[in-house]
Image (cartoon, rainbow, N blue to C red; front, side, top):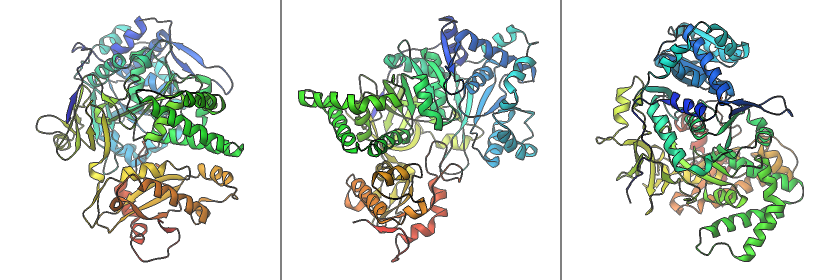
Length: 609
């Protein structure tokens, strides 16, 4: 199969927009819970009803109108994931304006580009530090008229400042936009070059969310709850925010992942959304905890049982009696504790932003958490396809959502078309034209394949394909994803373009290192010390050998080196969704890369056995 199109289940009137989703939620029960806000540690969360949330949105929208925001104006939000973020998002829409997310970690240069390209008129920032970043470029962004700071009472100021605006004006503005009108501009974090502003319409969000709710009703059953902790500046969490409104789901927010376990326990979500790295860290942390308690053998047995039991579910005969018994015992000893770490009520998890891998997919399903792995991009309003509770193939990213289509080009590139595809890049007609085929399919730049049932599998990234000196094409993600799953590893970058063989540069996980050292009876050491430790190198060697089993000999890693530092968003080598900015990395680490192909005894250069 080279093309699969899922028919649209629900068609919205052309005059519909995102505001209608909230109106419908309120009409279904203004006293029903919409969100919960965290209090101090140990205190219960405060319930916010749909009616109260809507009233807050209207009050803030009035404040924006009073400050001169007109329909179509761009309003920036520079804030961590929070309840206030969602209030601002819907208030800007209620004012007829266009929210423009800005990562709170963005540099002054990045902020300048976004606000000048989008023509941002007003920015609501979270903190004085964010406001300071904006202040650095204020003289180069003449469109900015005002910067408000949440920590200094911005939300209250907007409420009090809008009391003179009539309810009828907000009602009028809420009805202005139609499906084809601009809802938001989201700047792609981008692994290369300057970010492009993807123009997503009200139809992209509204049509995709109502169809997704219809396609996956189990996730949105009565009592559905989700805790947002991924950045709302990214399209993944942003889509889930709107999806929760459309699906009747109670929203929670937590801005700091350091508090994630505590907040999961307090909020008790029924479904979780995360990137694969989160699932890897949960597993690695649990393994280290088991080792510290002298129960690592039990943990590894429970892991193997979970994976075997999940794999057996895909067999028509299902798990046998003995495997079922082992699974029941493992659930009591191990799985229940892991489920408790996720809040104890989660049945589903939505994974996106990269491949999860079959092993972890089966592990979590065996644990009792169905990981619904999906795939999408900013330009497709996040998901284009996702595995369903009743239709899952672990290792794939699932079937297309209703109204979405996929086609595999002759060179293997994944092409998309449907209700979810953006209308183009802001102020960039050349890039827009280049991103579509002559017959209107969006070029994703990713490689994939469709099976006989229409399930999509991602096989690599078109622009990241490495071509060795011998002419072998190598998809680095196959190797990188497997190596990154090791508890010692933070990041892995596979290299080898125009080189005689494939190499890799690895960074150590500063958080995972202490647990691994303790588990293996080794003394504490820094990352710089650990990169030269024989046992650490031996463990990494085994991780590379295991990863090499997924590829041919010509594609396998022959040498790797361990870097002394990590790749982070702050130092510019990771995008906010944790993708490596490969071009910048290859340029700055050229000496380390060249050392892989030189006859040298450089520290931490390791020949794979």
